[in-house]
Length: 222
Image 1 (cartoon, rainbow, N blue to C red):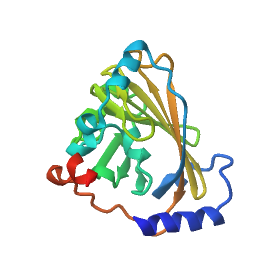
Image 2 (cartoon, rainbow, N blue to C red):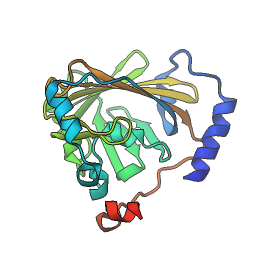
Image 3 (cartoon, one colour):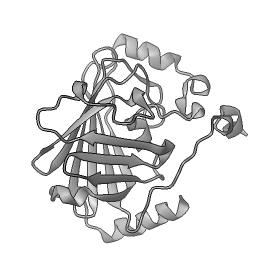
């Protein structure tokens, strides 16, 4: 992981700042996170109540080797992600927690009618993808109620009414991904997190292989 971070910094120095959107073919590859822009969430009274009661020692799904959400997975800076586009589906794979998503690219397909994008983690919901110009757009519904984020904004929760829209914008060896969350139970208005990535030449997704008996809070607290 340390080598990934060092390489990302070296690439960041050499690659121009994010500018215009490129061709969606440029999305293919392995990417490392450079930085995150997090909007301040405006929570409903129920959202504030849930956040105030959050206890990371008991409520953080990481200690159970369970990814809370795609947002939580992307907030982890060191493990890379991979995008692979195909004619009728797109893969978005994450090293963290070994999350593998396969999202159909089918005109007119609603997310609610799509299969679970990650059968191993059905709580992440059902997703459908399409292109808006050169931007890859993934809509997800059917996410189960639980913790939304434990790192970027600790203690955020999501209801089973959560809907998310991810937008993958290419620009050569840079990629920007914005994730907007719509949840009438916990958010007064949509909440967006933006991730900036740089391509990792020769990068690959390694196996995370989280084991619950090794991921307990007690172990990390030592």
